Length: 266
Length: 271
Image (cartoon, rainbow over all chains, first blue to last red; front, side, top):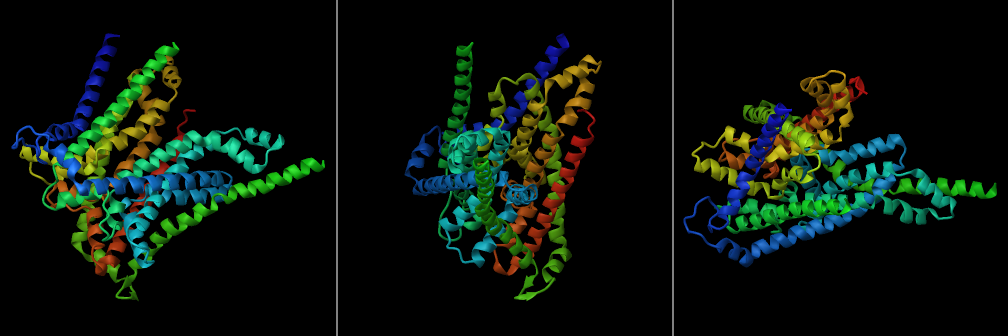
């Protein structure tokens, strides 16, 4: 029993070490967000300059706006397209289902750079207008597969009798679809939506290669341009720190509310 | 009789109509995923508006390009193996001691919410402060740092979904902890290992930016050089050949891993 406790202590030390490794760079970014620099030095002393500059930067506001617009439209379109298709794919004949799913897998297993250059050649050859049209089509094409894959398992867990029962009770196929199937898969639709949004706002390579010369930048490409042209603007440290604190709070609060709920249930 | 046959008919009509829902997407994916990939294939054979193998010759006769590919593969293998060795214990410990505290598991993916370029910059700053020379070693560290969560996540999902009673049964039948792990847990976690490997290996060899930044552009990876080729229209052909090579690598990796996955689920002899 005692050796079990030692193992557990050692295990937890290991977890702590890996967490420390993962968080060290981020914590340093948070600390130096108060330095007004984008390098790790307090040459300007302790200052809130980075945070103030954040609100003054037109570039940052535009990048944020573009990221949210692209992420928003992409996730809505991907979710609708993906949900409808998942239902369709589920009822395809096995052979066709297999083929469709392989195509669906392509953007997920393929390397991002190949997807990006393929889309680039495609858009340029077909003269699709630069800017939003290219970016939205690109984002939708690599986000939708994740929505489909998040919904399919839920569909296969559904009791087919539910649907049959609705038909027997006189519901039309479409009523049954909207009253039975869609409400049942709703949780998976929502998680697919969140996934599509996250993947879209996180994308760098496909956006970078397909943004063209319209000057449209998302947060990721904006950071990259900034890094290449003479050092990062210090306000990115402030932005990252804020995102980090918000995400961490969300995770910890989620845990707290879950725990209190469990306690209440007991 | 009449009613039931009309019911049957409407059901058959419905089977057809539900299937139809997949068609728009199928067409969309054919246009925006398959056609662009076919265009790469086509471009690989085009040079100066004529159909030729010249691009293949150019790529496979340049030592530089092949060296970059070799370097990328080595770095990809190293990153994947180290991520697996570091990440498996994390997922295992989480599944064993912290099943109820999902937050702890979530803490391992929170860093992914900070843009990877910012994190890479921070790592570079750390290395600069410590006076570490930027090069292959620092790139390897950056890759491991960036992709470790992608390894932990699928492993954690698989390990937590393994039925505890298998391990307990093995214990009851006289297995010690080590052999329970080697003969029960490890074989059952193979699907997680496979998806972890796919989530780390391919992105590592094809990502650009991380390598450029953490090596002061002294280390070029395959992703970086594909990106370079597509900056100029003249080199699109060679770039397309390189993309094809990358695509073939992706397919080989997936076929190999899938086969391995099937073998273990079929022949594990456990269930």
